[in-house]
Image (cartoon, rainbow, N blue to C red):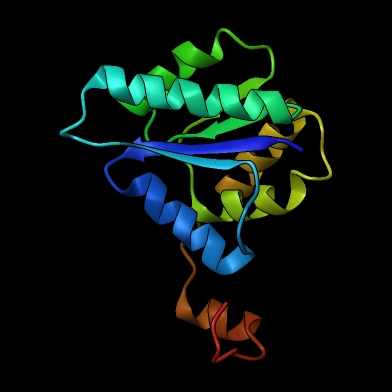
Length: 146
């Protein structure tokens, strides 16, 4: 299994984690580390390092999902990941990529392959559909939600 860490500014990581759980169920080996404005950088870095190291002990690799290229969570994750061979850091994370990886990570043991799949899924999840196109694609609307 590949472990996952979601990190980002403010409530990005906790919010995304709750959405994943709502759609795909409770996730194992899945850590959330928020970077909050009132938190010292050293504490954030320590929490992120601890989450990655903890997952390293029980998984075949770790993917860190961050929010913003160049932001503090991304830069901190990159520095920490540089000490490990099997930690990948992604940025621009979104719900489609996390749902898919949440389902695939028990079957894939190569962290680089899974990270590449996450990027592809994330890109495919970003679209600008028009209402006419949607009505042609959607045959039945589920009123219960996802």
